[in-house]
Amino acid sequence: MRALVDTTFWLPLAVVASSMLPGIFIFALREEQWRVRTLLNLAGAFLKLAFIAVMLFGVYVGVEYETRIPLVPGFDLVLAGSALSMFFVALSGVLWLITTIYAIGYLDIEGSWHRSRFFGFFSICVSATTGIALAGNFFTFIIFYELLTLATYPLVVHDGTPEAMRAGKIYLAYTLTGGALLMVAVVWLHGAVGPFDFQEGGVLSAFDEEHRHRFVPIFALIFVGLGVKAAIVPLHSWLPASMVAPAPVSALLHAVAVVKAGAYGIVRVMYDVFGIHYIAELGIGRWVAVAASVTIIYASLKALAQDSLKRRLAFSTVSQVSYILLGVAMIGPVAAVGGIVHLVHQGLMKITLFFCAGNIAETLGLRRISQLGGVGARMPWTMAAFTVASLAMIGVPPLAGFVSKWYLGMGAVQVGYYWVIAVLMASSALNAAYFLPIVYRAYYGAPERPWPRDERAGVLETRASLLGPTLATAGLVIVVGVMAASPYSPVAWVEIVIARIYPPA
Image (cartoon, rainbow, N blue to C red; front, side, top):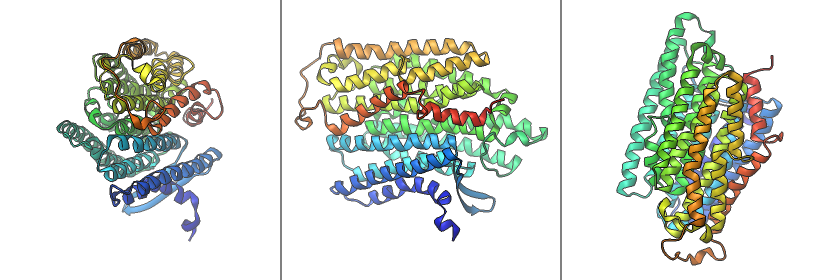
């Protein structure tokens, strides 16, 4: 009877179900039932945000949330709220709502069929992402991690073209292989120490020396398995290939779900399985930092060579997501703040950029950077949003990207990783090299041909359902940077997370 009224039991489950159940109902809808589909999408998104808001407040004041459902002997399905998990859940909830609004407008312009299929899998992807965030043990994590892989595949191949089907095969080959390696590592780990729940501060440091010689290779397998979705070089090739997917899917992959799930998973393993101090003792942190740094520079160089706008943005994602791992791997509180807050900052910046790319492609039919001459005059609001997000990616103050890089740089000095400063400087220079020419061409270049006219856009440069989300996320890029010192900013919440991991002496 207690469980029937116990919100600490039901709320984590409700956060996951609030997008899963609408998604299941949407599959049954006919294409012409767009009003019902839109209502289910938006109702689920707003309900999820309401549940998340209650949990955020509860976690802030010290309430412990846990849904525990025994499935097989020794393995429970566990969803639990912590300061770290709620940070990722809140990002997913907010960006899902914004991306859903954008996707509704995008698919209407595109005239696409299979919209019920699209939005059904779209909702399940977000459920899987929130399940990953709230997972209280490896068993639960893997269930939702593999569900995310399977639910994302139909979105990648949504257009059904030969190019889309090829991208889907690449995506499955990489992600299923990564999932298999993760499963091997988890089975090996559980065979060595038995089943356990995630715990702030880690659980493995309590085991004796007899077990410890296995932990480094186990971590290596976990890192590779999760590193596929996190797009760590050389495991990243699926991500640029997946850019044939519709713009809302690209936004979902890069800012909300897949790459963030991989990066978040690695952070969770370092903090709540191994423990950050044990990671330092085993010498793992420096190797993660090196892998992240190589990814940052390599992907930035690859971005320079891309004429396809979405592929350039894809390689930018490969680079930027590794900032998260770099911050955590330096084993210091200031750097960790920069890394974890970049979960939100990168999400806002990148979703803005993909929304802009989608606006330009669907309104003007332009998909290559060499075609963007004069776009700033035809689509001034879209290009203003693109410019804001680009400058933030470069690290121009006081925008979101500057805040992340400032904490990473100061954190590197704090722990003596001075070479990281050179990585950050090189990355910012490369960011400028592949973003500023796009902005320059859009404002100062000449159009190749007269712009097509979209009568449905009315007085706007494109439809309001596309422009509104784009301007909203661009505005958030500015707000989270300007308000970084506010007690209500993402930085303030991350400082709560880090205070639990690095308690004051």
